[in-house]
Length: 189
Image (cartoon, rainbow, N blue to C red; front, side):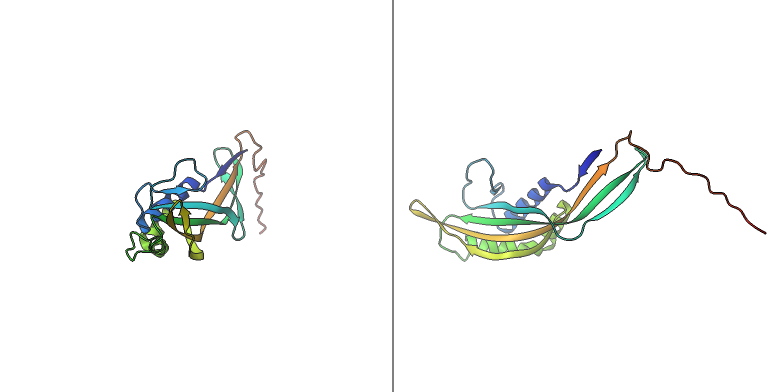
C-alpha cells in the first residue's frame, strides 16, 4: 500500500501570511508562525499560531476508484476539516492612532474586514482554504517591554478545508476482480 494525503498545509500558511501582510498593512516578511525558531521582527509585525488543525467538521465520504495502472481499487476518504488560528498584530506603542496603517487595533480590524473581499477569497480558494468565521472578536493585550508599552491585538479565526486521503494499492496486489464469466444470453421464442 502507498498512502497519499493531499491537503497542502504549507500552501495554507503562505496564503494566511499573504492575507495578513496585505490586509493589516504590514511590511513584507513581517508575519511569522508561532513556535518558529528565529528572532522577533521589528514592529509592526504579525504572528499566526495554529491552535487546532484537522478537526473533523462533518461526515467523511469514502469511495473506491479503479486504478488502471495497478488494476486494483484505490480507496479515497475525504471530508470537511476545520482549522483554528490565532492572529496577533504588534505595533510600536500603546497609543492607538486613527491612521489604519499604524495602530494595532485598526490593523487587526482592517485584516478582519479583508477576509471577505474577492481578492482574499480567491487567494484562500487557490490554497484550498475557506474562511468560515471569526471565533473571538479582536481583543487588546498590551505588554510592557522594559520602559515601553507594546500594543497587541488578538483574534481567533476558523478556516475550512477538505481532507483527501487515499490508499493506493501496490502493483503486485491482488486484482479487484479475480474472474468474470461471460454472460450467457438465451432467448425463448
